[in-house]
Length: 414
Image (tube, rainbow, N blue to C red; front, side, top):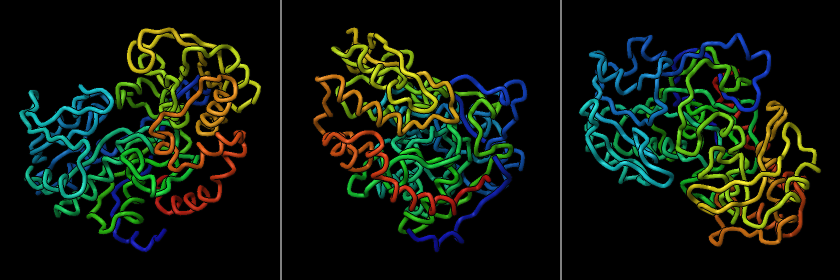
């Protein structure tokens, strides 16, 4: 991977912080720091980065201020910003759509602004949307959760590509990685498996903020870099979980209700690629996993591995929608007791291995969706061959080490 285009990246601002899950450590309780997001600092600077520009914003319900006002409503009411359009991703601008859905084209009732649908649009088709909107600058402000297959970062990527094609400036307003930015974990995507849940070769848990990812995308992956401005946070440190930020949590998608969900998601979302429920349709999606016919043996096998930072409880639940809707299933609930020691990707692999070994009904989804989620066929084929968690994790280390070396050059917070 080349790093020769870093000089094309433009950054604004100061330093920043990250996420939650499990009991907050004593150091975080009682002395929560106040993180100022990229939007906060943009507003503090009288929107200087947007001066003289017709502006469109790519955002969703997470694009809020510290007092829970939406940034679109704030900018629309401010004469210093010429806000002319909004662009909605998966789930929509106001967040009315479930997974795999969007809101379509409409006029926002609160502001009267035209809202354009970006979901499943890329390349020239998305560039045409930007051109038709009449904007000069596209602003991105969405809360990520730190996993490669969470689609908002690929909305970011697609919008950067399209903005360059349409000749538009691109401004990224940074927000915390809610599960910290300490390390990159897990397999690195093979481009042969590129989809909307992974466009480019980054790690499964990337350990970056959206502004850092934008810099990485621009410097490593875009054929022609976009004119990029990144507005940094202040007050964020890489080791911070979300409860250290003082910011309100808004579910970035319907099945990401809490920062606890984000903590486990980079590992347990892999169960989307199996015939087991990943907990959609429960109050603890991605923390509850199961299927009909699963019993206590799975929790016993998982606990026997003595994985750092997590315990597994035998659990029974009946999803209200998605897999096994209205039927009682057996499985496990993850209980993270030491989030600093917890490795979500290794845990996800260990749960796949033990599920396959302890339940005869285990199967991969027929479309090999697991390969799209892990970024190659390697994880699936190793598990099918009887490999244990250590062997699977060891198999991706060389590519992960190479990604970590590239990643370091784009980190904005130390």
